[in-house]
Length: 206
Image 1 (cartoon, rainbow, N blue to C red):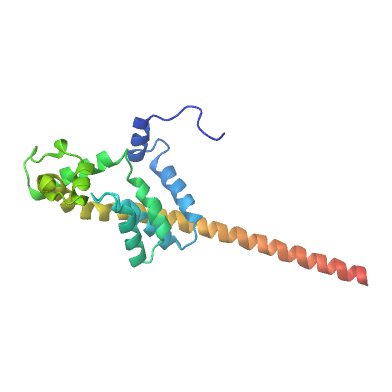
Image 2 (tube, rainbow, N blue to C red):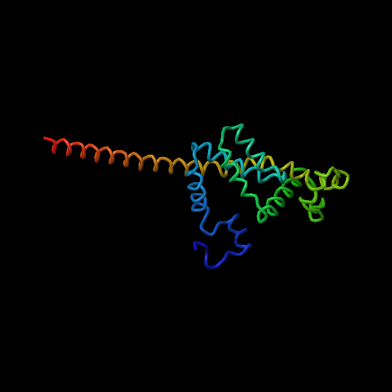
């Protein structure tokens, strides 16, 4: 009933992640208002989501929920918000995230362009073999692909955390202040109406 009449293409969805068609300001406000409806302080909600987004920029597939929740617990952030933040990493954005990690990692390690086998293996294959204990089959992938990504993921994750945290905290603070103001007005009106009704009832008794 409330779905779009014309579905958005996958390419458009990926493009909206990196450059939202409604603009970064409106997009961040939308996410902020959705988060603000969760119970918690502006810090806990914004930090939780930021941890989820930051962890998405790591090669630890299958552990993003756990890692983001652990970080949220350590820093007293909202764990539910951290789970929502991991949505930043999804099948449409992971290829771009992994490419960024790989290229930045190679640059940080001082490797020549074209070194490694990023195009010859997938992250899923690596972790499947790793969980099965077949390290010997994926050791070359680790040194050629995973190692550069591990080197770059920490500084990139820190940058991503700050990119999400400060705008979301400001939006959530504004939302909470507006909601508190509306609640205050509602209570004041209820008190006035209640007092008026009691005065009328007293007058009738006289």
